[in-house]
Length: 112
Length: 113
Image (cartoon, rainbow over all chains, first blue to last red; front, side, top):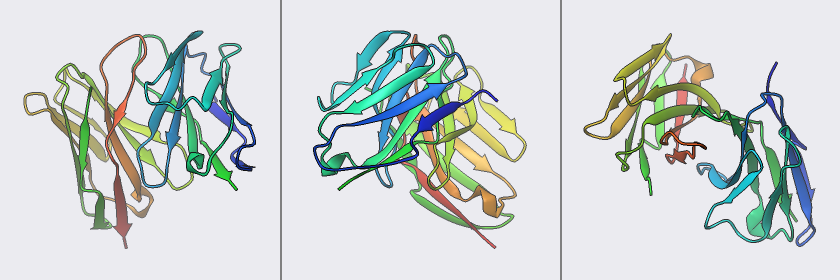
Protein backbone atom coordinates (compact mmCIF):
# COMPACT_ATOMS: atom_id res chain seq x y z
CA UNK A 1 0.00 0.00 0.00
CA UNK A 2 1.17 3.51 -0.80
CA UNK A 3 1.91 5.33 2.40
CA UNK A 4 3.84 7.82 4.50
CA UNK A 5 6.28 6.25 6.94
CA UNK A 6 7.97 7.94 9.87
CA UNK A 7 10.86 6.64 11.90
CA UNK A 8 11.31 6.30 14.71
CA UNK A 9 7.82 6.40 16.20
CA UNK A 10 9.23 7.44 19.56
CA UNK A 11 12.44 9.35 20.10
CA UNK A 12 14.01 10.36 23.39
CA UNK A 13 16.85 12.85 23.41
CA UNK A 14 18.67 14.95 25.94
CA UNK A 15 18.48 18.69 26.22
CA UNK A 16 20.78 20.17 23.60
CA UNK A 17 21.61 16.86 21.88
CA UNK A 18 20.92 16.96 18.11
CA UNK A 19 18.26 14.66 16.81
CA UNK A 20 17.06 13.67 13.33
CA UNK A 21 13.61 12.43 12.44
CA UNK A 22 12.92 10.77 9.13
CA UNK A 23 10.01 10.49 6.76
CA UNK A 24 9.61 8.42 3.63
CA UNK A 25 6.77 8.08 1.17
CA UNK A 26 5.76 5.65 -1.52
CA UNK A 27 3.12 7.97 -2.99
CA UNK A 28 5.61 9.69 -5.31
CA UNK A 29 4.25 13.05 -4.19
CA UNK A 30 6.08 16.27 -5.06
CA UNK A 31 5.34 18.09 -1.84
CA UNK A 32 6.43 17.06 1.65
CA UNK A 33 5.55 18.88 4.86
CA UNK A 34 6.76 18.85 8.44
CA UNK A 35 4.36 19.79 11.23
CA UNK A 36 4.82 20.13 14.96
CA UNK A 37 1.88 19.16 17.13
CA UNK A 38 1.87 19.80 20.85
CA UNK A 39 -0.56 18.21 23.24
CA UNK A 40 -4.21 19.16 22.60
CA UNK A 41 -3.25 21.54 19.81
CA UNK A 42 -3.61 21.59 16.05
CA UNK A 43 -0.66 20.70 13.84
CA UNK A 44 1.59 23.68 13.15
CA UNK A 45 3.42 23.84 9.83
CA UNK A 46 7.19 24.17 10.17
CA UNK A 47 8.23 23.99 6.52
CA UNK A 48 7.56 22.24 3.26
CA UNK A 49 9.37 21.15 0.14
CA UNK A 50 7.90 21.58 -3.29
CA UNK A 51 10.15 19.15 -5.12
CA UNK A 52 13.56 20.44 -3.98
CA UNK A 53 12.35 23.95 -3.35
CA UNK A 54 12.48 24.56 0.42
CA UNK A 55 9.89 26.84 2.06
CA UNK A 56 10.29 27.89 5.66
CA UNK A 57 7.42 29.27 7.74
CA UNK A 58 8.23 32.70 9.13
CA UNK A 59 7.91 31.63 12.77
CA UNK A 60 9.80 28.34 12.54
CA UNK A 61 12.72 28.51 14.97
CA UNK A 62 16.25 28.47 13.55
CA UNK A 63 16.83 25.37 15.64
CA UNK A 64 14.84 23.38 13.07
CA UNK A 65 16.23 22.43 9.70
CA UNK A 66 15.24 20.01 7.00
CA UNK A 67 16.77 18.01 4.18
CA UNK A 68 15.18 16.31 1.22
CA UNK A 69 17.81 14.23 -0.60
CA UNK A 70 15.32 12.73 -3.05
CA UNK A 71 11.59 12.53 -3.79
CA UNK A 72 10.96 9.76 -1.30
CA UNK A 73 12.79 10.95 1.80
CA UNK A 74 12.69 14.01 4.00
CA UNK A 75 14.49 14.63 7.31
CA UNK A 76 13.84 16.98 10.19
CA UNK A 77 16.94 18.01 12.11
CA UNK A 78 16.66 19.66 15.50
CA UNK A 79 20.08 21.08 16.26
CA UNK A 80 19.77 21.80 19.97
CA UNK A 81 16.48 20.51 21.33
CA UNK A 82 14.96 22.38 24.24
CA UNK A 83 12.25 21.21 26.60
CA UNK A 84 9.77 23.22 24.56
CA UNK A 85 10.50 21.13 21.49
CA UNK A 86 8.92 18.05 22.99
CA UNK A 87 5.98 17.29 20.71
CA UNK A 88 4.60 15.01 18.05
CA UNK A 89 6.25 15.64 14.68
CA UNK A 90 4.12 14.85 11.67
CA UNK A 91 5.19 14.40 8.08
CA UNK A 92 2.67 14.83 5.29
CA UNK A 93 2.71 14.68 1.51
CA UNK A 94 0.62 15.97 -1.34
CA UNK A 95 0.83 15.81 -5.11
CA UNK A 96 1.62 18.79 -7.27
CA UNK A 97 -1.87 19.69 -8.37
CA UNK A 98 -3.98 18.37 -5.53
CA UNK A 99 -4.86 19.79 -2.15
CA UNK A 100 -5.16 16.56 -0.24
CA UNK A 101 -2.44 16.01 2.33
CA UNK A 102 -1.68 12.55 3.64
CA UNK A 103 -0.08 12.26 7.04
CA UNK A 104 2.31 9.75 8.50
CA UNK A 105 1.81 8.27 11.98
CA UNK A 106 4.12 10.82 13.60
CA UNK A 107 7.21 10.70 15.79
CA UNK A 108 6.75 11.57 19.43
CA UNK A 109 9.83 13.41 20.67
CA UNK A 110 10.68 13.54 24.36
CA UNK A 111 13.40 15.89 25.58
CA UNK A 112 14.96 15.07 28.95
CA UNK B 1 -3.54 35.16 6.63
CA UNK B 2 -6.27 32.57 7.04
CA UNK B 3 -7.84 32.00 10.44
CA UNK B 4 -10.06 28.99 11.17
CA UNK B 5 -12.25 28.75 14.25
CA UNK B 6 -13.76 25.45 15.34
CA UNK B 7 -16.57 24.65 17.79
CA UNK B 8 -17.21 22.93 20.08
CA UNK B 9 -13.89 21.98 21.61
CA UNK B 10 -15.43 18.90 23.20
CA UNK B 11 -18.55 16.98 22.26
CA UNK B 12 -20.12 13.99 23.97
CA UNK B 13 -22.92 12.05 22.29
CA UNK B 14 -24.59 8.75 22.91
CA UNK B 15 -24.04 5.92 20.49
CA UNK B 16 -26.47 6.20 17.61
CA UNK B 17 -26.95 9.94 17.94
CA UNK B 18 -25.65 12.51 15.47
CA UNK B 19 -22.68 14.80 15.99
CA UNK B 20 -22.09 18.17 14.36
CA UNK B 21 -18.86 20.16 14.38
CA UNK B 22 -18.69 23.66 12.96
CA UNK B 23 -15.88 25.76 11.52
CA UNK B 24 -15.61 29.28 10.22
CA UNK B 25 -12.84 30.69 8.07
CA UNK B 26 -11.73 34.21 7.30
CA UNK B 27 -10.05 34.17 3.87
CA UNK B 28 -12.57 34.32 1.05
CA UNK B 29 -9.88 32.94 -1.30
CA UNK B 30 -9.92 29.58 0.51
CA UNK B 31 -11.52 26.95 -1.67
CA UNK B 32 -10.61 23.59 -0.15
CA UNK B 33 -11.89 22.35 3.20
CA UNK B 34 -10.78 18.96 4.53
CA UNK B 35 -11.69 17.23 7.76
CA UNK B 36 -9.22 15.06 9.61
CA UNK B 37 -9.78 12.47 12.31
CA UNK B 38 -6.92 11.91 14.75
CA UNK B 39 -6.91 8.99 17.13
CA UNK B 40 -4.69 8.97 20.18
CA UNK B 41 -1.02 8.57 19.27
CA UNK B 42 -1.67 8.54 15.53
CA UNK B 43 -1.37 10.97 12.64
CA UNK B 44 -4.41 12.80 11.26
CA UNK B 45 -6.44 10.82 8.76
CA UNK B 46 -8.35 12.58 5.98
CA UNK B 47 -12.00 11.51 6.27
CA UNK B 48 -13.81 13.85 3.91
CA UNK B 49 -13.20 17.10 2.07
CA UNK B 50 -15.17 19.63 0.08
CA UNK B 51 -14.29 22.21 -2.51
CA UNK B 52 -15.90 25.59 -2.86
CA UNK B 53 -17.78 24.72 -6.02
CA UNK B 54 -20.13 22.37 -4.12
CA UNK B 55 -22.35 22.92 -1.10
CA UNK B 56 -22.55 19.42 0.32
CA UNK B 57 -20.74 16.11 0.12
CA UNK B 58 -21.64 12.82 1.73
CA UNK B 59 -19.76 9.59 2.32
CA UNK B 60 -21.78 6.94 4.17
CA UNK B 61 -22.31 8.23 7.72
CA UNK B 62 -20.34 11.43 7.33
CA UNK B 63 -21.23 14.58 5.43
CA UNK B 64 -19.80 18.04 5.08
CA UNK B 65 -21.71 21.21 4.21
CA UNK B 66 -20.24 24.50 3.04
CA UNK B 67 -21.73 27.97 3.09
CA UNK B 68 -19.37 30.19 1.12
CA UNK B 69 -21.32 33.36 1.76
CA UNK B 70 -21.16 32.93 5.51
CA UNK B 71 -17.68 31.36 5.35
CA UNK B 72 -18.54 28.36 7.41
CA UNK B 73 -18.53 24.62 6.96
CA UNK B 74 -19.70 21.76 9.11
CA UNK B 75 -19.05 18.06 9.66
CA UNK B 76 -22.03 15.83 10.32
CA UNK B 77 -21.66 12.29 11.64
CA UNK B 78 -24.83 10.22 11.84
CA UNK B 79 -25.43 6.98 13.75
CA UNK B 80 -22.29 7.53 15.80
CA UNK B 81 -20.32 4.53 16.99
CA UNK B 82 -17.70 4.21 19.75
CA UNK B 83 -14.95 3.99 17.12
CA UNK B 84 -15.88 7.51 16.01
CA UNK B 85 -14.37 8.76 19.28
CA UNK B 86 -11.34 10.86 18.35
CA UNK B 87 -10.19 14.44 17.82
CA UNK B 88 -11.51 16.02 14.63
CA UNK B 89 -9.78 18.92 12.89
CA UNK B 90 -11.19 21.10 10.16
CA UNK B 91 -8.84 22.96 7.85
CA UNK B 92 -8.88 25.42 5.00
CA UNK B 93 -6.57 26.20 2.12
CA UNK B 94 -6.63 27.55 -1.39
CA UNK B 95 -5.42 25.88 -4.51
CA UNK B 96 -1.80 26.52 -5.26
CA UNK B 97 1.42 24.82 -6.09
CA UNK B 98 1.65 23.63 -2.50
CA UNK B 99 -1.47 23.44 -0.44
CA UNK B 100 -0.83 25.00 2.97
CA UNK B 101 -3.52 24.00 5.43
CA UNK B 102 -4.73 26.23 8.23
CA UNK B 103 -6.22 24.01 10.92
CA UNK B 104 -8.98 24.65 13.38
CA UNK B 105 -8.29 24.03 17.06
CA UNK B 106 -9.87 20.58 17.10
CA UNK B 107 -12.95 18.93 18.61
CA UNK B 108 -12.67 15.99 20.95
CA UNK B 109 -15.64 13.72 20.22
CA UNK B 110 -16.61 11.12 22.78
CA UNK B 111 -19.24 8.56 21.83
CA UNK B 112 -20.66 6.88 24.90
CA UNK B 113 -22.50 3.57 25.07
